Length: 177
Image (cartoon, rainbow, N blue to C red; front, side, top):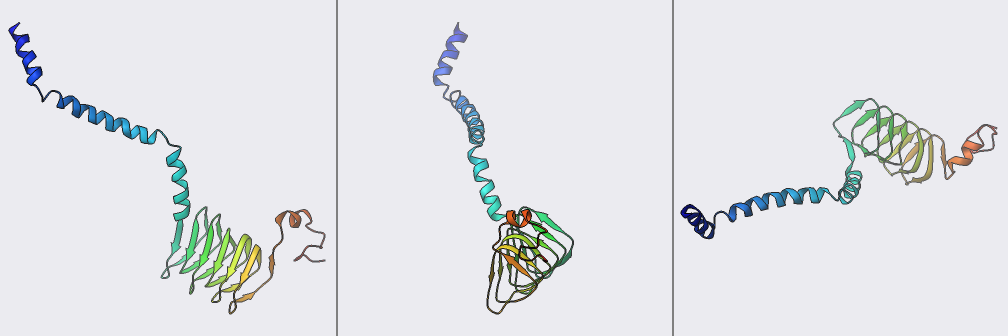
């Protein structure tokens, strides 16, 4: 009994034992808090895609020359030279002094440099004053700045559905009669 009596005062005087459980409580609380933060993944995944899409841009630097093919969902900025087709669901920007030789499929195409190739199914094409385009354009909207140069055919402002539905009858713009 004296042992129990000695332990009883130790519990009263034992301020160190309560802090130990407090430290243990803090650690599980932190561990519980982290899963609680990940528990509402509805907020994190909603936040993650928006910034990633906004920041997803690949750059071909001015001192690079690359040959190949680009496909993906992000944005592409070409400041150097690229030879090959570009097929992206994002935007394509060709900087001043840059050159792209190849076909292009992109949501929005901005040309300040030089493009030798056709642009197909873009929602918007902007040919800036320093831009040069040698090729055909099929786009929802086309903006051409004074001083830019273009050699090729342009088809814009037409919905895709009527053009596809009436192929071959020679009545659509850009088709032979």
